[in-house]
Amino acid sequence: MDKEFVHIIEKVRAYLFKNGYKNFSFEKIKDFGITEQDIFAFVESKEELVEKILEYERKSFEKIFLEYNFDGQNAIDILFIVSQEINDKFMDVSPSATMDLKEVFPEIYARHLEERMEFIFDKIQINIQKGIEQGMYRSDLSEEMVGRMYLSRLEDMHNPELYPPERFKFGTIYDTMIDEFVKSIATDEGLGYYRQRKQLLSVLSFGR
Image (cartoon, rainbow, N blue to C red; front, side, top):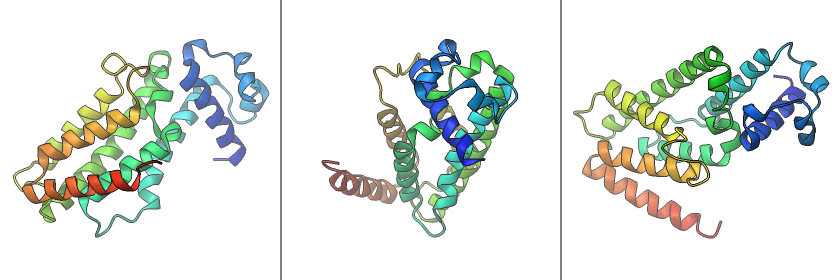
């Protein structure tokens, strides 16, 4: 994407995160330093703008896996790295900024969600396979079943009725989900490694 357009998308996402799409107007978005002319210099309709916003969200998430070479790394360490990257890049990768679009643009959002979930499903299955081979995860696990379980938990995380955003921080919800996920699939060795790494990372991040 054009760098100038990416900058516009980032501002639109910031607006959506704060106000939601139901309150969207080209007049209000001027407060975020964007005009209607700025937007329509790159897209021809609101529908196309929504498609580009959701594409940006997907690509920002996928970029995490392009920036890191996970070959040979411990499966549990990979979960920690991805978790930290999601926290650091929250505004770029979190669906929390675009949940309102599901109601207004259901078909566009459904296609986006399908692509996002397919990508995550593929990556978590690779992680499960790696963890089993490394002795971190139990050998009796079904990669597909665990992958679907992970996706189900991920969907629940973004349900505002379950976790009202004004009461629960995304990072806290995600960390808790990963904690429960690892404990449900890890071997004794894997669980010991997970606790050791979690304690170390907690010490390293203290006061940050």
